[in-house]
Image 1 (tube, one colour):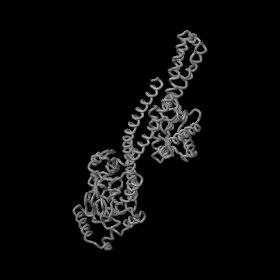
Image 2 (cartoon, helix red, strand yellow):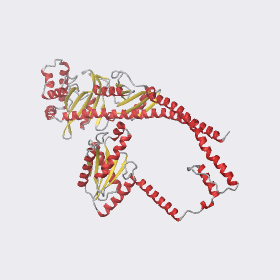
Image 3 (spheres, helix red, strand yellow):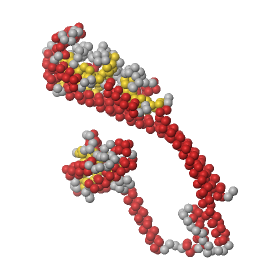
Length: 589
């Protein structure tokens, strides 16, 4: 068999084996990658949902705190406490018991005794909140520091509340603490209710307790249903004991999660599980874990509610079937098989052609070597390309003409030296420059900044730093693709460079973060430059997206500052700018 065909056959076999191995490996890795990415994605979604629910709860707490600060409430508390404080402990208890007994025995809501609590100014103020936020509240009621009802938006089961778990938890032995009463199903409003219990202070003294029962089922169900509409999996909000609060396929408290999920919930941290052809991601609501500032819990059962909380946190759980995850992976597998067949056919034809192309120079080399061996030193073989065959041709020509083995001329050496110098300059430039934006990279910036900080400390000259990043840049990449993301980065870099002064140093710190050194610049000047930069970027038309904004942190060198302390302080300023709503400039003093 000629070498041409031996070479072609070897190339075909090796190529086919390599294609099969690559395709099989890619299919295997693709499956595992899909599972891993799905778990990570679902875990991130669960965390985002948890943050969203926590934000909703925190907003409800803020509303209750605002309500509790009303002057009419403070006036009513001062009056009620004064009335009960003047009575001795034993007589006070007797009076409370008598009032509570009368409350329990009076069924007529229009009775003067009942209207004393349901018709006073504070009660009317509470009912006005009902009218402002229709459907948001169950009962809103106020007790004095002895647990006795002062006013309520509706008839409650009892008048005395000082012996109840939520009241004692919020009163906190007179120190006060916000408490979230996970009541479960409230029979008085026929719905799932969460009690927001806030202490009311006069200075540092707790003078009363305000409780706002909010209807939480609607907002939670909206979140769960929205996820089900947009994703293949099922989202549930559950307690640590596995009891399902909200799910798209069942009413509250009707079901529990499977046993294998319970260990994940008991960890009370974000976790994932791939088991029994299910992909599970969980994350707890940090607010429901309880803290010194905010308590969370309840009682399992009381006269006016069932399925109350007995010390469990809330968790967001996302469950997805393997089959729904693998749909796209199976489509990719079909594409891989077709691609392997096409590439295999192409490799076969290419191998035959290249076998002929590669062996032709070898034949010519063999013929030329034979003639040189016969004494014909004038013959030469053509040198084409830079492969091994060309090297062999070059060596053969060298044997025939040893004049080509002389040393390179002085001019050749100078040219080579200049080429190497230019190469070294280019490598040095690449080592200091960010490839995408053309700005200084982090390493070069750090070196320059250390020199500037040392110079400013030595001569006590002003120096400021700016640190900024592109707001919601991940959303740009996710929505428009990384090519648009790269364009946004390069345009932001260009605008930043054009906005700065000649002596300022702009660098890409990493990702969408940028840094600027402002030598001989005090804080007031740095703020003007930062605002000018923010306005320039915010006002530029990027086409896709239409507008991009940046958050900027500013700090000024202080006596004794180091590189690390300046970086830490400007990073904190950037964090404050983002926390305050983004698209703004914040200063770290």
